[in-house]
Every structure is written in structure tokens, then in C-alpha cells.
Length: 145
Image 1 (cartoon, rainbow, N blue to C red):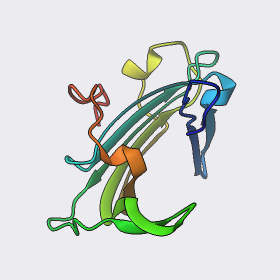
Image 2: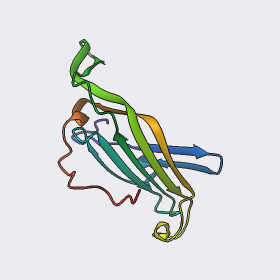
Image 3: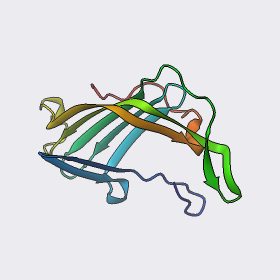
């Protein structure tokens, strides 16, 4: 996150590599990203779409740890290391990823994904202001994972 005048735009970069698939999506390249996250639910959801090609990626990362350390991790600040804002992290998350190669808009609804994997032992970290609840988290994105 960076500041331009009064604005604080959030930039996203999603890169997916597998033997049969190579996708790069960036908000700086005008790819559409829709995200939702909840620190208290320990959940992050992202849908990325390339409006020019119809390529699509869906990611859901959810913490599976039953017990969490509620103490923030120290992070570097201008005045030294501090737990304010700090970050909370887990190494017991599960990531579910689906991706579709380019195709007609909306065709992901009728085509099988070109990539569909569940990745155990993913890392999930909420840092700084992202530890607060996202006001717009009114429900899950339509990920169909």
C-alpha cells in the first residue's frame, strides 16, 4: 500500500506457476481484483480476472490452526522494532487455488479449471491495519471452491 496525494491505493500481484499454467495478474496492468479478508475469521479470498483475455484465478486461504498466539509479532518501524502495529501470522493455513486459461468472459462457469489444487501448510499473515476487520466483509466471494 502506498500513498498518492490523499489516496492510498492497494496494488495486487498474483503469479501462478505450474507445469501447464503460467498466469500473472497485476492491478497495475488493469487486471480486476476483488478481495475480502477477515483477521478474526483468519480468512483471505481473492478473485483475479484479466478482462482482455478472460483468464481467471480464485484463491482462498484459511487458517486451520486451532490455537493462535494473540500476541503480535514485532515489525520494523521508523522508531525501531515494535508490536504496534505488528502482525499476526500462522503457518497452518490451507490455500485453495483454481485458475482458468484465457477464454470467453464468464466461461469459467462452464469449463473445468485448468489448475485446481489445495495447498496445505500455507502461511497467512495479517499486518498493520489489515488486522482490523474489513468493513465490507458481508460474506464470501462466489469462489465455488
